[in-house]
Amino acid sequence: MKAVSWNPNKYDQTFEDIAIGRLVEAAEIVRDKAKSRCPVGTISRPMYKTGPYAGQPWTSRDAGRLKASIRITRKRTKTGRLSRKKNVRVYAGHTTAFYANIVEHYTPFLNPAFVSSYSEIKSIVGAK
Image (cartoon, rainbow, N blue to C red; front, top):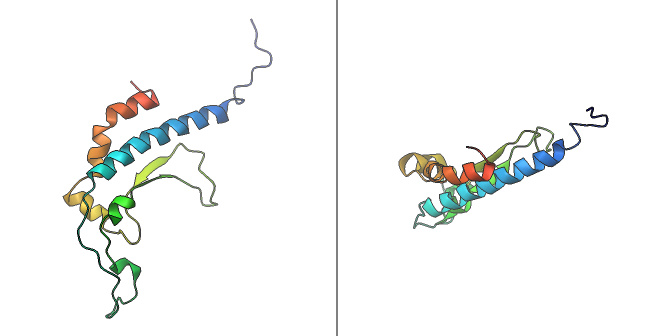
């Protein structure tokens, strides 16, 4: 038997979309668990009005800013397009919540979220 019109590249985009969808679904589980484990501070204050760092937005503090910064991203190329690689990541922190890695070091919340959801991730992705 001979396959005359067989085109293996025809369904590549469909398979990639399904794989990315599964990775995003798995990342959502990790994000939700990380948000539930993330410590929330009790101090809120406006940005500094005087001193050498006056007016800098990173000097302000809001309770729950780190928790709100936990997000899912897909890697982009330098031109701004989404990468062809299946790269889905869960990040914590940004310019005003720059202390995410310090908090993760002393009170881990992101790594335990990944470890505790490992079996769920395997079942979503279809790994054994």
